[in-house]
Image (tube, rainbow, N blue to C red; front, side):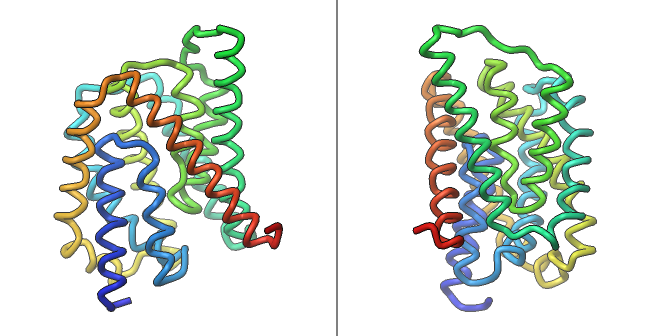
Amino acid sequence: MDGSGFWIAAALATFCVGASKGGMPVIAMLGVPLLSIFTTPATAAGLLLPMYILADVYAIWLFRRNFSPRNLKILIPAAAVGILLGFLCISRMPPEAGKLIVALVGLYYLGDTARKWLARDHMARPADVPRGVFWGALSGFTSYISHAGGPPYQAYTLPQMMPKMTFVGTQAIAFACINWMKLPPYIAAGQVTWNSLQHVALLAPVALFGAWSGQRLVRWLPERVFFGVVRAALGLLSLRLLWEVARAWGWL
């Protein structure tokens, strides 16, 4: 993992991680596939986790005044349960199964959104404990497996119709907590090592620049355009994951 191709992919993946922490939707999920060209997905996830944590610190500072306390109180404990389940299941579950779960969650949300639009149901759905516990646990589970906790989070929070910056800030703080909770089991599983930590010093400026760029772009985008981008990115990502699963399982 020391060729120029690896470092270009690592820089691009790190920028995507940083930009997502600045508020750009779903883009961080490009990181693991990019690095997986040069290493295994599990190793790629371990290499990127320190970058996530570094960018999380900056993201919390960026959005320290914009978040939903009620959502965080529900989502963070639920995500801890999902992370524990992910740690217990990862050795028994094929990677494609996690991708399939994430893809189906994204498509479920988009299908439900289309149904409500056709029915002219534009009422915001407030945060509630039963749904928050379910989607929060699923977000922690999929985040542990492949840093793919975004779609379950969005399936729960987008129907609330929070203001743009509150939506982004809640996401930044929730996933900062999730990533810190993932660190001990990643170390125990050998996915985060001294070698992966050494990459932090070299790639840290890229992660921070990505977070700054993402935050500037989010502030510039009109709210309606921003949420349109979120939904479009979620749909494209879900379809791509389904395609990867279909290829891996010989359906194509």
